[in-house]
Length: 359
Image (tube, rainbow, N blue to C red):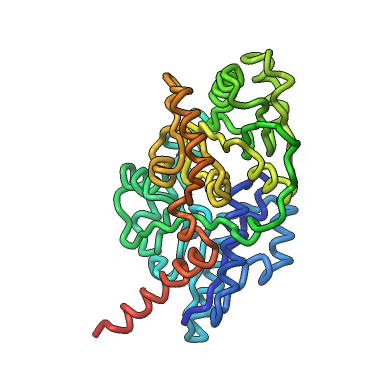
């Protein structure tokens, strides 16, 4: 069986957000698998990581240096080493075409909304993803929608699969904080980014409040100032009904999920939507934008919102039916950390077994 080196260089990016959370859960769950030797790059090379943090050394340069160093050591020791890169980038290789690498592609938001990315960043991503498509690495997409987006622009990879993000089920079992008695609120648990469409969320909340369906909108994450400006400009009458809590503890977040009338996310683009998956794991109703990945992951569970003509009566019936039936989210078992870790570990086992069977 191969050893694994997990390139957690995302820790050097202070704005990594949800992607870093996914990586940490994945690394932790892979380490819980019996019989596997899994190390992180930051633990193997703490001084180098600290130097990179202080100097602003590019993660790509750091990964290229470490990847080739460890590849050479593995070759000299005649052992198999699998390198896992959890965030798009494939380093330069002195030998081979990355047959021993796993790379995770989260989404292609920069293709759907190029206005949110600099030209240099778009060219950099194009170059990296084109190299990835031509490599022999195991390419993991976090949804079929992301895979289709990738193939539309770069073609099919030699080795690719879809593995959903891990949803931390253990953390989900923490005791909830009780919501204020009788308070009916929507929860929007994600950072502020333009594609998150907070304007659409505020407008739907305003309609639901006027219809007597909810009283408040609770928001967590970064971006309190941006949301406050948006409320003042678009829905000033809601100023006292929108509560931005900022960054909250895991326990408080779980309590907010569980006490909510529904989770709301009217994003214009997502690769997976981890917050929605967390809420669905807890059995919370979802109000989601009608985009491909939401249909793929949450179809049959969520109420998909057409912003142009959202039927509030149908929405209210959906929430009432959900409260009565308490349906389970169909993809919950596939997103448990143990199941996700097993899928990742199985990639190189399958490849090794196939190569061993060749004449």
